[in-house]
Amino acid sequence: MIILIAGSTGAGKSTYANQLAHDLPGLVYSIDQWMRSLYWQDMPKDPDIKWFQENQQWYVERIQRCEEKIRSIAFKSEEIGQNSLLDLGFSTKDHRASFIQPFVKKGYKVETHFLNIDPEIRWDRVQKRNGEKGETFAMNVDRGMFDYMESIFQAPDENEGATLKAIEN
Image (cartoon, rainbow, N blue to C red; front, side, top):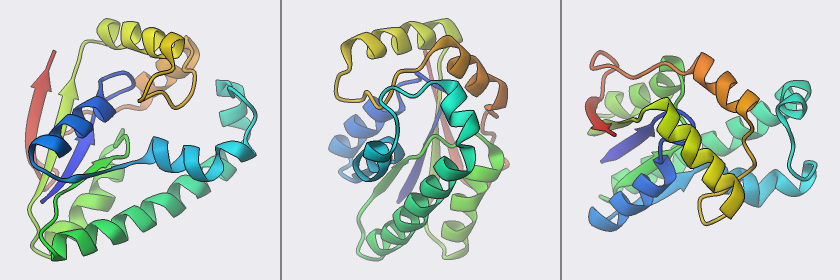
């Protein structure tokens, strides 16, 4: 089974994915971990939203490379009966479709787990994560970056081709 983990910033996607992987079992493919391992050393320490805006092409190209490889691995995992949990943000319908459609076309079971968490709860979590820099910390997220992600996030719905499971506060 392929499971897309969707939710806006601070929803708890990585924490949820890691717990679900233990419960199913399955493997988590986290874009934050891939980007941190492969490309963080090429970025300034603690980049702000301005850096991401000015270097959007560079950053997006690397995310796309990671996602292409993750998609390929998830196909292979599905062929051997291993569950794949994709912790890739999935902020837009188009992004989700780029993963859902190829898997559904092959006849694979695909679910989207949507962490529908109140924005104020998420902002509190982000501030805590920024301070603690624990296991799921990837980068500092300031209020500007948080608000930007809020402005582009599109909640998933049941018409996207995957079984939708909503997880509320």
